[in-house]
Image (tube, rainbow, N blue to C red; front, side, top):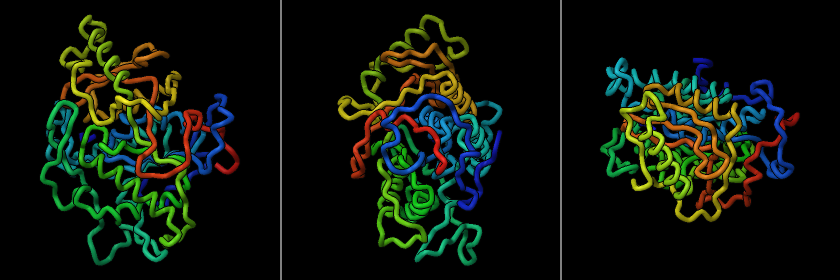
Amino acid sequence: MTQPADSAASGADSLSLSAEAVSPAADPRSPAADRLPGRGIVAVHAHPDDETLTHGGTLATWAQAGQPVAIVTCTRGEQGEVIPADLHHLEGNGPALAEIREAELAAAAAALGVTHQIFLDQLPLTTNGAAQTNSAAQTNPPTRYEDSGMVWVGHGAAGAVAAAPSSLIAADKDVAAQRLAGLIRQLRPRFLLTYEPGGGYGHPDHVRAREIAVRAAQIAADPDQILGLDPWEVPAILGSVVPAGVLRAGRDELAARHAAGQISGVESLRPETGQDALPALARQDETGILELDVSPHKILQARAAALAAHRTQIQGVRSFKPQTQPPYLAGAYGLSNNFYSPLFTRDFFLPDPDWSGVEVTADDLIPPAPSSET
């Protein structure tokens, strides 16, 4: 949304995954979880904070299980609103805000246990098997994908604004996807995680990031594309969703707790209710929705810390006793619009409709134990 630990990676050469780079967990694994080819996850997002808000629990679960996880962020969120009063001067100053949000993202990734994060424009563009990085560019200015901005057009619904030529939505989609395709071939992930086709709530950068992810998977799988690495067909592209009934019930329970004064320090935030309009990621039809239990304490704790790291964008992060039954309430958070929204003990996904991958079950979302190849 564009609404300090390790620094973000400075280029693709530093993105080399190893078992030593992550902290393995001893939790038991489902026997079905290792039936798919590939290793780990590549998560593709539009702005810093989206990785945590969208499926931070899943990233923490896989990273803490010793599986390789990489976050690719398309922009630095230059157009984002700023919540803390002491940082209001950053709003409208794209380069200054970008610097802060890069640091926030690095801290959030570290909290999740993810040691590999890179910006899309830092990935080399490979043509005819030869890689060209931004730092090696001689004749043209380095590519930089910037936040396209948005405007609210309804509750939980964003629309486009006039975007600058440097914005993500103005960029050549195939060129951007080719950068990501090289990383997909290098890492050979099991899952590509991103948004559903509506971008979660319609943000134009979210929509474009998902389009880039799908196109990159197509390029990575195409043997006619010469990228200097063997083709890799990602088994599944998964977009984050939420069952509409779970979201409505979670909103109503959160609103009831807020009205009863059970959540201190967030009196200025307005809880969403089941009567409010639903965002694009909400699904009335729950057919095919996959869910991953992210209720273990260490996972919820990691997600909460990652949310808190995005200080310019997220406020009022609170944790509750996690529910193991619907509506799966685990906590709450607020954004710059001052609405208060629920956090859940489940992450929900749907296979992308534009990718013909393998059939995925909920068991496949459980990370396998790390192997000697990880």
